[in-house]
Image (cartoon, rainbow over all chains, first blue to last red; front, side, top):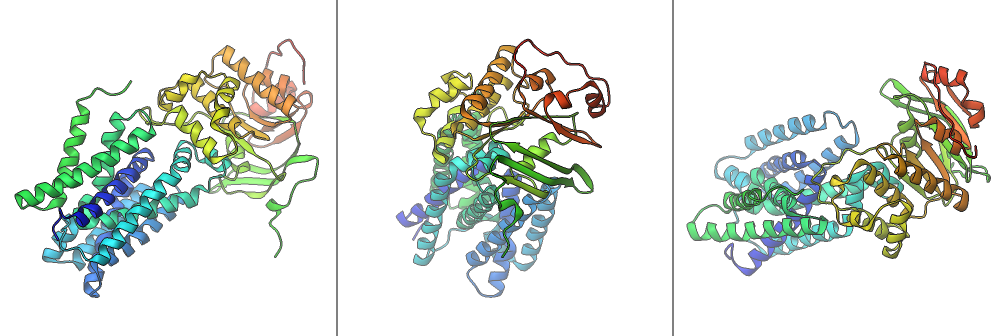
Length: 256
Length: 245
């Protein structure tokens, strides 16, 4: 099964759409740095899974979900210093992960390696991506209101703390899904770059979600195709395509 | 299992009861041992110098920050909250329509209620298509008021709602709030620095200062002596012509 087979495209495409949608809210909530740092925590999970002869993605997902809960707990305490603590914790996670993982495995984990896709991974991946996309579409109203004002959200009956936890868990799942293609270092950028491009062009929330998801999908499919065509790693190419899309949007003058 | 005091309903005539409320940030007590009760349909003005804990009090009342003491709202209370100026990025691609339509989907209002609510808040329909970051301070404030009104609130918490709004706009907003209170029995809690508005519209005044609090009718509280104690300097205000509440 190649990276361009229908099932591989379905998985990478749905992962990209999920990342593009979630990235919009990460950008608007000013948590792009936290989201990017969160992706680094996957590495010690991968390292541990390899040591214990488990599936690396299972280890990554476990570590990411744990990382999401750590970010959530930090967020609900003092806001001051959260970014700094996240920087320390997740850079440390990257260092520990690098010690646990070696050689080729480390490079695969850092930059992604599509490899062969088992039926189990395909089904789990598609279900995960569908769950994340459903979450964003179902929670979009609550996410918008809570990003405008926490107090307004609470009086509108939104359980803000719980919503934040669900959001971070959705983010962790999305990063886990994308690790195969982009790796620990680059996955955060697939959530951030398409959303940044969309923000420059969109006039309302629907447009932002649509443009971001489209740019993420286009970058992933084009990157995979370029990787196959020129025998390169797909991860860096996906990010280069996304960055090129963003650069194109900078040609347009900012919205009034 | 005993029920938490916050979950017990207040006395039937009260829409809100606050007992021994304190809010601390670390070792700093911003609100200290505050107690008061409000009847349904009353208008409470919260006054006090900057930093005296007025906004913190509101945030505690809606449960957005931890506090000590008890805050009891009557059953079935629907709170509309209009915060002070928010720090939003200008290029946020969320329009007024995105925000208001989100509210209709989350609550009891429908999209058909939007035009009437916009009118009540003194807004034209074009804010629906404009990103909220590009609205002027006054327009955004009115959008937040429209947001609060959409769910047909029984209590309105307004944190300096007319800050940044031009004079005719202020007048219209005050009238809108006044009408909601008088005609629909909405209870209003208002933080304001405009003592003439407080004197004119409030049924009760709560003053917060570093070392003391006071609660009473405008005539009881808005005296030169008490105001001088609250603000730490003599305060004068002009009472406009018109009925005094």
